[in-house]
Length: 78
Image (cartoon, rainbow, N blue to C red; front, side):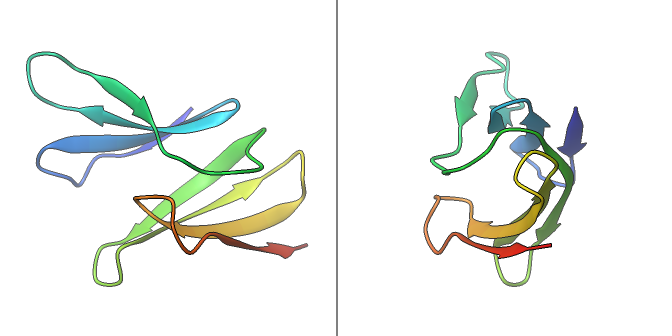
């Protein structure tokens, strides 16, 4: 599991089959980001200036990019 914790109100966590947003309030609510083709995500990164997350996926052998709302998802085959 990989996570990004530079957020004030939530963290982003890569787990098998999903990339989740976990809210850091008292509820610790977990919500999967609406992304496609995620199996074994790892190497998670966030570009705060552009608002994109990036991750690699071992199963698909690719690098992906998407906004936090799941829009603009694209991938590059390795």
